[in-house]
Length: 394
Ligand code: AMP
Image (cartoon, rainbow, N blue to C red; front, side, top):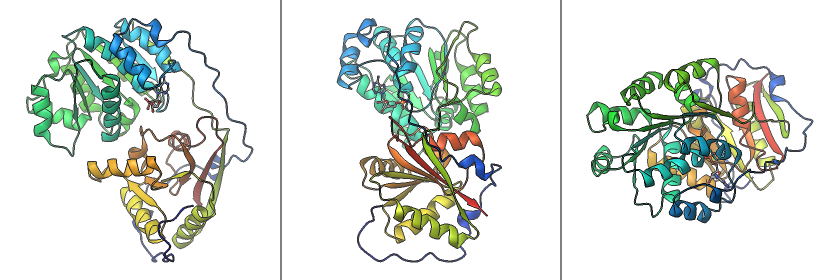
């Protein structure tokens, strides 16, 4: 693993409790072991149509081409036509499936062709909202459209200015959108389309009442598009409450296989040993790639960031308490490879478009199996064999 500079490593300090204040995982060691790695599944999907078969605005077609999208991904293939027809959609899709363009392509077409169209997109985190906004800007070039990104940590005044200027695409997180509606600056009752991205995450983060409130503010005659990585009966019931009875459910696969990810545990019996073994794991990790380290708390992330940096690893941390600008910089640093170790909480990592991770380290074991699968799914993408290591107390 690359290190910054050539300084000799500092040793860890004893007795730092911050990384240990975390909920106990209910999972057992065997959940984290899978040593018989299967070759990765290669997608044999052949799209039944190409974008050019669709009646999309010419400039949108041009932008899709310019982005290098040659054929629709499976989620796009199944969701674009019903959205273009105005049908409600419940899409079950993970980050990395191309789900953002799956709703943005038909919605951009609607915006370009219908001046009365007003859209609200809700995402659980600022980063995801930003990614959606970036995709909107690149796919929406030369269509005479502009969006307003309404997330916390940024000037509300500028957001209000853009709303008042007549932005017909509002992308934001539930908290800031609630603030703007309560202040009377955003009139949702005049909007026509609502998109909820990563519904499962929004519910996990406790946004359920905000979401109910916001959907109810919409007119009865609305177009609703809901996306979620998982679909348990609770989510399904909630979504059905707000979707038209004729809604289309698009489900691609039950859950992504992790058979191609080599999974093993790292045992430790006391905190110093845990820290030492992380250092050894990163030192021994010679492959040229990126490592994503999960901690369960924000303090845990800060603690690991400090300690790994002291050891001269090019490590950076990301969590919800960091300034928006700092989180963006961190993410870019990791994406560009300037820092090759990213330490994150589940919430901060969820939805981020980080795909080429060669090893996932669960420094703190996840609370449940869903989170575990989601975490390790960051490695072993695009036909590669992945690697995951989970720390387990003996
Ligand atoms: P998402 O699941 O929306 O986060 O998208 C994951 C990545 O796939 C993003 O980097 C997109 O730019 C990319 N992407 C989306 N649609 C396509 C496509 N049709 N062909 C190739 N890449 C795509």
